[in-house]
Amino acid sequence: MGCALIWFRRDLRLADHLALDAARRAGLRPIPVYIHAPEEEGDWAPGAASRVWLRRSLEALSERLRGCGSALVARQGESLATLRALIAETGAQAVYWHRLYEPAAIARDTRVKQALLADGIDAQSFNGALIAEPWTVATGTDAPYRVFTPFWKNARQRLADLGAPIPAPTSLPGIAFDLQSVPLDALGLDPPPQQPRWDAEFWQHWLAGEDGAAELLDAFVEGAARGYKEQRNHPDRVGTSRLSPHLHFGEISPRQICARLDSIAWPAGVEPDVDHFRSELGWREFSHHLLYHFPHTVSESLNPRFAGFDWAEPDPDLLAAWQRGRTGIPIVDAGMRELWATGWMHNRVRMIVASVLTKNLRYHWLHGARWFWDTLVDADLANNTQGWQWTAGTGADAAPYFRVFNPALQAARFDARGSYIRRWLPELAALPTEALAAPWERPDLLKSKAPDYLSEPVVDLRASRERALAAYSRVSAG
Image (tube, rainbow, N blue to C red):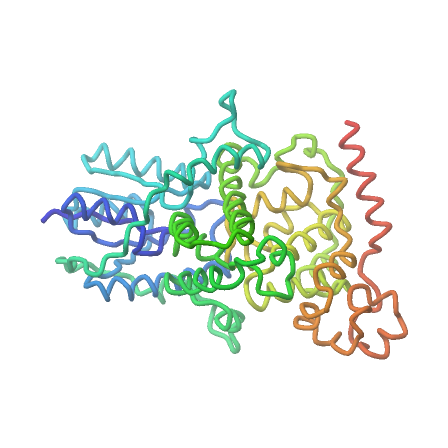
């Protein structure tokens, strides 16, 4: 039996794995391979939170492969050279993988495919991460979309053609070669030894791997899907799927999620909630669409008018206060502390903290994007870039005048009981609920009930909003 290398990257699952399935259908013995080469991802090599998730996800994949009678061969080094070495060691006649869509990954994968084909190797890549690949969706003039609604109206038509997910294999051929594999502990994914580990609390909230993804999808369809359209805005409730890190690492595919949603006879009143969730998958698609067609946006604003925008020079102390949840604005501090403790932040709160950084402090959105990149377990270059540019008003669908969030009003509306703020800011627990959103407006109460909390925000919200609007008006006038 001939063999094929299955090059795992961010597709760390066995179910609905097109590359693995292609090898099996071709009658080739699959050899699962992971190559650790973060330097090939350019300026956006995985951050610290992503690395610790990757470590656990690789272990979960390795265990699943062992349960099927196979194994994961881990190597470290330049991808093409490593693949060629493995081909020489195994006599593999094919290399199959799932596509990635970041600029550096596209360039690397293109070089690899061309070189392997020139070597006489059957090199094939597959779509294992998206509903509609970026080059398959275009406007009537064959241009990329810049606005979500018409993009999703077009792209969502692909939902009907996704087909059924491929079941995970129950057994796989063993690897009939004495292949060396680098221990996962040697890949440098875990933090340096220290007590306590900074990621220790992460794993009270997450289970990396296919099993964790399946558990969250089960929980979503049995619970949060009902009422999702409204409940998703409230950080004090379990109103979202929390599938984003599992999607990023490919522990579950969009096709698996859509098939599960389609398999349920939803009550008529719930179908709008489920459809809204599909549209959130659509935003993920749109982010990849934008990144593919406008790769410069990882470091530059999509809207060229912002090339000379009057961003403020960051004050290191103010930036650190924002990063560590010490701004004196409770909803912002709660969000940043949730991020530090869990590697994740509720999407509504992400928009609020991003607005404060880019509008009130008027710092370039890259300062926030870089911090999220290092601290989020779901740090995805497409989603991260699009999300920050959306809030900053520099990207697609931008309407900056209407996106200067008032964090106190946002907290009062979406954390009306104060449960979210109290959870992450226990020093404010003694304050009455009506004072939690803007405690600086009740200075005597704040001093007596929460003396350790800042007496006022690090930035004047009203004055900074006016300065931001003035700066944005100059862009508009230009």
